[in-house]
Length: 167
Image (cartoon, rainbow, N blue to C red; front, side, top):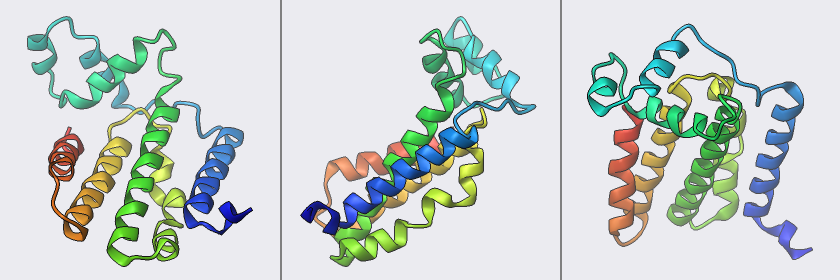
């Protein structure tokens, strides 16, 4: 049971518990917003020219197109968005751990994040939740650059995350 003495184990258990609560409370069922149809219309574009002619950035419609291509319509959107957010929290935990040298301090910093206000958007078909996720990834990559030797992967992650946050 030495595994239970590790902060990463407790973080993963917390994320699994959060996912369970969301599943029971209906937090994994998608919710349409008045802006959702415009993103769906952009996702159904037949060409890049048509897609880029919409007044919406192309990132979220591209995400929707990928998800809806599974044939499950919008059902998988909330679980995928939430799992991506949880992945960003694991990266953030690792970045704080590397900077501070303490997994427990990193766990204490990340502890409230799965219950933060942004979780209210986890099941809404809007780009705001993924933009928040990308922002967490960007900050994590920046912290990783500060903590250790700068590596191309963190620079690439930082640039990609900032780009995705604005999509």
